[in-house]
Image 1: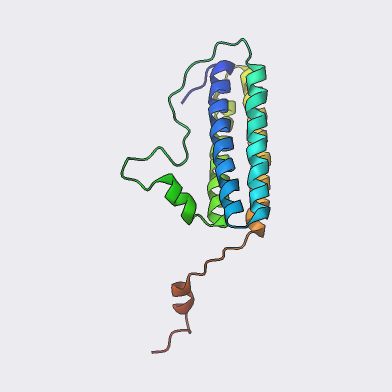
Image 2 (image 1 turned 60 degrees about the vertical axis):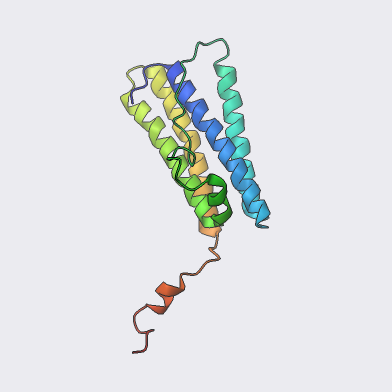
Length: 169
């Protein structure tokens, strides 16, 4: 995908940020439902950051004619009709899985902005993409830190019992 103008970059960035804010809000609610207030707070903060990014982008583009986008930025709902419903996925989601999904989404967003930065011929567009990539980098750092601190309550007992020296024959 080639981004040729600031207006195109802004519309893509707003779509990415809106989707992230919505999903992080869902993750926060899920973690709160599980009694994990620490991660509910992390995801709540991320949802707030993303919502603020959307507001900032909207202010920057006030009066700018923005192109329309297809719905390309859905994390969980873009699959075929026979795929698992996202409410089921959220019920089965562990804290580490939620963090891993969020981390990968932030990395994809940063990679998108870095791609625009590398390919843009307009210095202003390059600078804008660099700024947006840096914001995603801040989110990646936060998620890396949270992931390092999160424990996974589920143990893969099959792998424990199949470890060398643990199976009696």
